Length: 152
Image 1: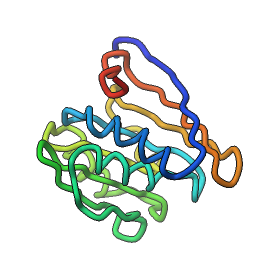
Image 2: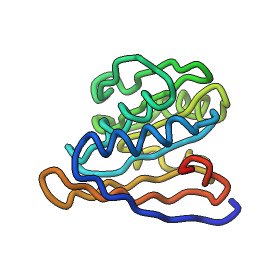
Image 3: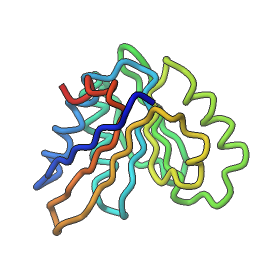
Image 4: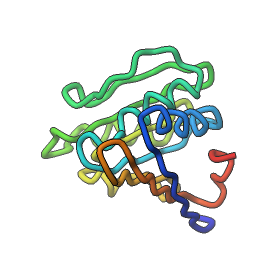
C-alpha cells in the first residue's frame, strides 16, 4: 500500500450519510473494496443506498442480512453488497467473496466483515460508523492515499 489516509465526516441525518456516499459512488472506478463497520442501525445500509445511487444504479438497495449478498448494477460495474452479520463460519462464502474482490467488474461493499477480514486486499477503504446521538454519526474513513479520487 502506498500510505494511509484518514479523514472523518459528520452526518446529522440519513440524507447527509447518503449524500456523502453518493460522492464516493460517483467516483468509483471498479475493483474497490469498502468495508463498513458499525453497530446495528448506525447507517451502513443507508450509506450503501447513497453509494449505489451515486454510482448510477437505480436498483433497490436493502440489507442482505438474510441472503448474504445483493448485487446492484451500474453502467460501469456491479456493486456486490455483502453482509456477514448472521454468518458464524465463512466457509465457501469466503471463496465466492475472494472471486469478487479480485475483479475490476465489481465494487465490493462488506458489512460485518470481521469474519472474513483475512482475505481482504491490502488496498481497501474502511469506514467506521460511530453513533453520536439518535441521528448524528461520525464516519471515520481509512484508505490508501492513491484512493483520494473517491473523495474529490
